[in-house]
Amino acid sequence: MNRTAAVMVYGATGHTGRFIVAELHRRGFRTIVSGRDAARLAALAAEWPGVEPRPATVDDPASLDRALAGAAAVVNAAGPFAVTGRPVVEAALRAGIPYVDVAAEIEANVAMFADHAGAARAADVPVVPAMAFYGGLGDLLTTAVMGEWTAADVAHIAYGLNSWHPTPGTRKAGQVSHDRRAGRRVRFTDGALRYHDDKPAEQEWHFPAPLGRRAVFGEFTMADVVTLPSHLAVPEVRTYMTVEAAGDLAKEDTPAPEPVDDLGRSDQTFLVDVLVTAGGVERRATARGRDIYAITAPLAVEAVERILTGRTRTTGVASAGAMFDAADFLRALSPYLSVELSL
Image 1 (spheres, rainbow, N blue to C red):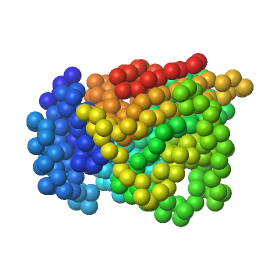
Image 2: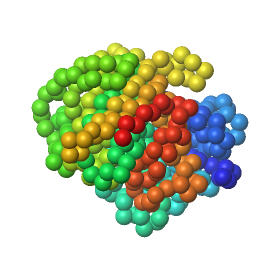
Image 3: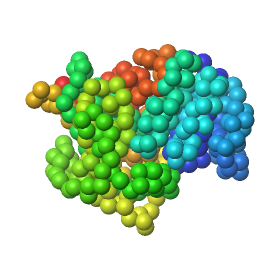
């Protein structure tokens, strides 16, 4: 693959953005780092040979166009995506290059599919939103485990996090989503997103070892309720979160993640457990790994690499499971992720 054309990372100085830059560098991609803070971009670029800083702001389309000049693709890692998604994807479409983001915000992902599908299809440009731990990974696992199934009755996605130390970006994006919904909660049922004021219900989920039976919040709704139904005939998508991790997120004084290894990862571990049911038959997929922010980097960069090498199944706006061969994609993540599929 020709790696002389650069990949631009918008929001490169953020917590997840830095992981993405490191993964691009590890794979030999020339990288452009962009965002609004020129000094922080220059400092980041100084850490990596050949990385080029190009400041740009989302309220200045010309600055985004300059930042994308000559780039082969863009990864948007700058939340809140309710603010950055539209201007960055529109800049990518003007440049005629693929766009990938790591948005976990439900409403931002809905808007990406609703507002940009036509333009992306007309431009024959791949646009992959939510190519991250939330939204992308669950979609890949569900798509892979469904295999030859063309439809299912319900997909359950349970997140077994031993802890959740949110970044400032996570907190800010979460607040934006909360405000956009006027504090309401959301579920995907009967084939549609539905907003409601029900209180979160605590229940139990039996995770595979080593977690076992754990208390979870039902309808702890994440971006999977957008990505899965965008291409899979599943009228019910239900997501769950371990009570301990949800409590960490809710506390205002929970500190941000701290690196404990040479890769900058925290000591957080996760297990994502997917259970899909069709006509009384169950199929299960599990993924185990470390650090929900760090794992987003190989997810996003693998997506870019596959797009640039023509290993895609469609064009326009599409989720991970629709854009790529899901099982093959998951196999490629084996250095970072342990996956089991029970078909």
